[in-house]
Length: 530
Image (cartoon, rainbow, N blue to C red; front, top):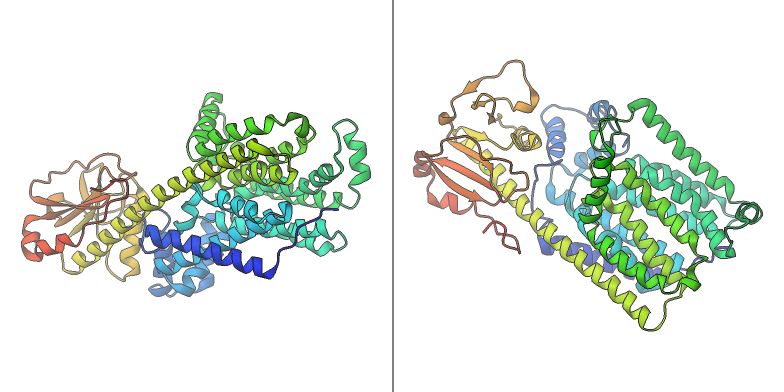
């Protein structure tokens, strides 16, 4: 029987309080909480607000509309209903939504701690496990308003905790049943978590192998004898996983969503290069320090040679993610399932087995600490840049609104690099009940009153020199591709963080230099935007 360690109410309160301090300390300290809108995904909140406020749509109308097109490429059936309901309740308020996102991270962190404590019984090890899972380049989950991996992760945490509770008390099968329910739900928030289901399915078997020290020789015979009462859970979860995957393949095929599609045009070389890219991008510190940690572990070969099941169950957790993202690689928030698997292997399983001792134990702890410290640095760099871009975008949006209301012609040049940017500007103006602005048509090199992404049958074209205010990405923005082919000799340039705003000289005479001074954005800690 799995002997899960108890978690007291006082301990739970303490961990929750600490998690709140850490999460809100980070998002407030870095400024991401109040950074405003961004040009990826955030247009959806503005569009929902516009539909509720100005089109008179009901909650059900908007959910039905979103699902009508999202289900043609994705399988995240729970994502939009929750997202739209949140917008319905709090409105398109970036601060309120950021607070909700931070609360979700706190819940996720506490659940990861609880799972770690059940397995190891150690407070600091479990806390370190939770921090390792959530701190790093995947920390974009802490501040980006769009990603659904947090909700999926919460469902995973609940499912895994219920599974551990059932293994602790095998006669209480309702824990196992609810674990299955949440294992299915996590895949309907984000598809990558469907591939975590085999881990949950096989964990009871793994746990029995670990407890009974079952050897590879004669394993099947021993498992039949020792795992009576466990197989039904394994089979049920695997069937659910297979049914969901089959439904996706039959309904959507293998290439409905390009970043994770599979087709004959992708070469073996591309798969190899994207795998290497994945290891050396957001996962780089886990990769480099993982080699060092593995080196320390292998010095205990005689003690760990029978712990093959730890490696197998970790591979079951991690490997499917690399397969899923084999076409374009895995980075940023998408690495979260991989990181959880790595943290389980190198933290939970190692410290539960208790073979570390002496100087090697201290070396192992130092390596883990260094890995976390460098991931903290990565989190700070990414969070600070997110703040920088958010403040840039939000000031540009409010300037667009203000100048448009004053009767000036404003043109956005962001869409040639990032079509979603035009979408965000369009939805921002609509959500404010204002008429749309102008957009750069790079093919005609003209201004148009319809954003190019819409591909309207008929649009009105205007000479660019008719525009009073023009804005475009500068080289401080990651979406920068090329400077627009526009003669700015009659304009005054004002740097607004990662976006440059160009005002006609006569406009400056009317609004005053003081107006421009308010558009400055504080540079990042590492000097971007100076």
